[in-house]
Structures are given as structure tokens and as C-alpha cells.
Image (cartoon, rainbow, N blue to C red):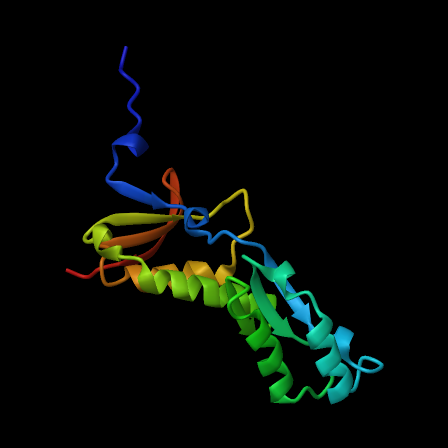
Length: 168
């Protein structure tokens, strides 16, 4: 009787699961809509009162995206004031949407990771995860790995889709 060999276990493939790169911390959208008169107009006096009375400590250790979910003209200084209050309290703060925030988190993370350990390796970027992952992260990690990997695939080691292979 022939011995059953697990070819996946013996393969030189290295699987990267993006969930291992996930940055901890709650993501929050700070909506300026709630501080507008009739959700349309920013009144400076009222706005400054809201800023002064607001409990900024509730954003400690959170990643914050500051934006406005309604179509209103918000002066740049309003974003600047809110962001100045959140800086030093929140883990990270940007002006934009939650998608913009997630993009920023992954971009910043991938900039500081040392990918040289993947030099000349055959990599599989895992496609399925038990947590939602932003589509952006898949493209960004691919871009970061291109100078190092010998090949990049997507999926699971038993069923991959070739993405890129270094020419000889």
C-alpha cells in the first residue's frame, strides 16, 4: 500500500494571511453632520460650543475618520479643530471615510514591515478569512512583495491562482 503524501505540507509555499497583519483598535466615523444646524449649515459659535463640551476621551485608543455624511459645505477649519482635539487621544485620525481610514492603516503598516524575509520565496496570499479584510490590502501587499518574492499566488495552498512570477 502506498504511503499518502501531503504535498501541500512539503511544498515550499509560504502562506500569508492578511488577518495576521490586522491592526487592532476600533474604527469610528466621527460625523460632523450631528453638529450642523438642520444638518446643512455649520454655525461657528454653536460648533465651537460642541467642541468645547464634547467628551474627547471616549476616542482613546480608537482609529477615527472625521467626515460628514450629508451634503454640506464644511469649512476646512472645522475639520482642523476636530482633528486637533482627537490628536493625542485617538490612535490615529484622518479626514475622510472609514474606507479611507482602513486604506491609511494598511498603507502605514506595510511601509514599516520588513519584507526581506520573503526574498526568493513562493508566496500564497490567503484568500479567505474569518474576518472582513479590505480589498485594498490585497493589492497593497502584492505591491510590497514584488521586489522580494519569486512568485505570488492567491487562494489556498491546495488551490491557488497565479498572480505574478519573476522572470528568469
